[in-house]
Image 1 (cartoon, rainbow, N blue to C red):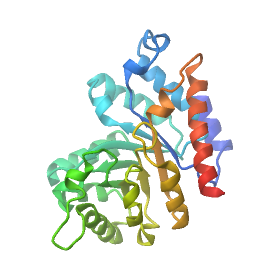
Image 2 (image 1 turned 90 degrees about the vertical axis):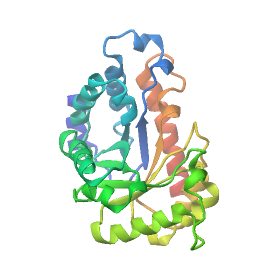
Image 3 (image 1 turned 180 degrees about the vertical axis):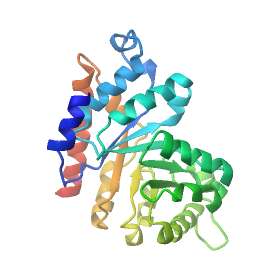
Amino acid sequence: MEKLIVKRWTENKTEKKNHLCIGLDIYPELLPSYITFKKDFVEYFIEGVVEATYEIVDAYKFNMAFFESMGSYGLKILENILPKIPKQIVKICDAKRGDIGSSSRMYAKGIYEHFRFDAVTLNPFLGYDSLEPFFRYINKTNYILTLTSNPGAKEFQKLKLNNGKSLFQEVISKVKSWNSKHKNLGIVFGATQKSEFKYLDKELVDMPLLIPGVGHQGGDLEGIISHLKKNNFKNFLINSSRDVLYTNLNGDFRKCVFNNANQLKLKILEIYYT
């Protein structure tokens, strides 16, 4: 993979964004036996995915739950893979961190200094002081959960407050306020939340957006991209995991994953640029 990466750095840079993020959620039970019989098959699979797709993606999102569930082996995979990914591709730590200040300082140090991720997902439930240690890393991007793609999002995130707003709207307001100072915040907003797309308004147009929920979760790809296009959003990532990684893995899995990712990329570009 090293040779591919050197070539990518020097020859294949492009100004036009593809807006595609591949979520690296590793389900061994969804992999065919010709992969799982290999020693260190998880690392082998991830490296193959990167080799196959690095020219058509803007980001990879590493779901920390899957790697942490493997113990030290999973963390070692991250240490091995992350340095090999081309520098211009955003490496997102999907950790949804958010804890008291002293704990968050250590989480931020581990994510940004040890693993050298470019971005992280954060849970704002504990408030500003639980997130501020991440904001200190001025060259990183901190994606704040605002309205997530899971069915349970309605239990808290859509609760109405005394001011008439939903809780997620209040989070968006806070994120905008914090970002006016720190300039390195983004928003996580689920593609399944079609009726709420209108809250991604022109005041957020300069902030990075991470959009999960496309594919397996049934998110509205055309609806969300059309909304972003109409409101002139440019800095957004559409994340897909299972549909890219595990669909039709017949023969060479690299070719299959590339085809899945490329189909999604072309669909994103068709909706956004035409």
